[in-house]
Length: 318
Length: 133
Image (cartoon, rainbow over the protein chains, first blue to last red):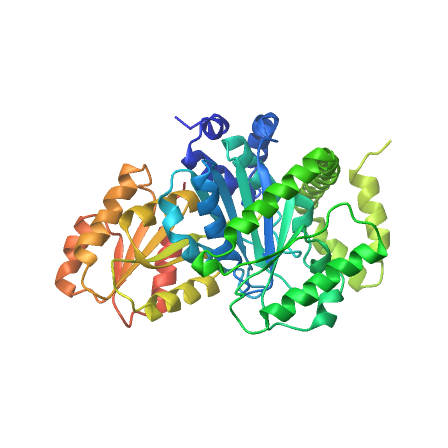
C-alpha cells in the first residue's frame, strides 16, 4: 500500500521526507498536495542562511556549526546547494564531503540540491523544502547557498538570520562597498582568518558596518566574527552572534514582520507558478505553440498581440 | 512537471585514497545530465546508505581500487535492502578481478564496470536500468 507521505513526515520518517523533497524538486503534483497537509505544522524552525563566494568555507562552517548545535541538543536540517550546469542540465553536489560525520547523526538531515537554472543562489523548491523539514520537526534549518558573487541575495528572503562569509585575499575595500551581498548580512563571518590579509579584511568590513551606521541609524549593528572553520575555531562565537540576532528580531517583533512579508511573497509566487503551469499545459494540449511561433515568424502576430489573445482565450478574470 | 533528474551517489568505501577515477565518473555523470552527490573518500557502508536515503538516490556508484569490494559492495546492497531501499541501482567500478564479478552480482550488485569501460556504456546502462520509485 502506498505510504501516506504527509503523515510520514509528521511522524519523523526520513524516507518520507526524502521522497517528498524529490517531488517538490520535480514539481510533482504529489508534492504540492503534501504541502497542503503539512503547512499548519510549519513555523517552528529557525532558519539560518549561509552565503558567500565560492571557496569561502560555507560547507565547513555549516558542518562545524551543526556540531555545536547538536551539542546543545537541537536537531538540524541542512540544504546544501550547488549550481546546475547551463549546458548539460547536470550537477556535481559536493557539499556533503565536508559533512561526512554528520551523515551518521540521526538528528541531522542533509539534502543536496541543484539550482536547476534558478538564479539568486537558491533553487525554486528551496522554500518548500524548508517547510517540509520544518514540519518534520527540525529545530534549526541551515541553507548553504551556492558560491555567490555580488548579486545573489535570494537567501535573505527565506532566512531569519543571514550569515555572509568572507575570506581574505579576494578583493579590496571598493569591492566591499558595492551593493548586494554585502548588504544582506545579519552577521559577517571572516573565515580562513589565519591567512594573510585577514586583519585588513576585518578592518575593511568594520569600516563598511560603521559607514552604514553613519548614514542611517541602525537598530542591529552587524557583528563580524573571525573563524577558522577547518580547525573549529571561532564557531562558538558565530553561534553566539546568531543567538543574539535571534533574540534581537524576536524582541523587536521583526521575526513576525519578516515572516509576514515572506508569506506575502511566497503566496504570490506559488499562485504565479501554478497559474503558468496550467496555462502552459493548456497551450501544449491544444498544440498552439507551433502555430504561435509561425505566426510571429511570418510577421502576422507579435508576442504582445499573442499575449493578449492567449489571456483572452484562457484566463477569466472578471 | 519539470524534468526528472537521475540522482546518483558516487562513493569510495574503505580506506583507499585515490579518487581520480571517482571524480572523473562524477564529471561524466553530471555531463550526462545527472545530479551527482559526490561523497568523497573513506565512506562506511552506513554513511553511504544514509546518504542514499536522505538524497532519495536512484543509483549508488561504488569505486574501489584497493581490493575491498568483496566486503563493501555486498554490504552496501544488504544495508540498502534493510532500509527498504532495494529499488536503488548499485553499480561498481575500479580494480575488480574478473573472477569476483559473478560473486558480486549474485550478492545483488547490478553491474560492474572495469577500468577502460566506455563511459557511454555506463551512462546508457544507468539510464536504461533505473527502477521507478
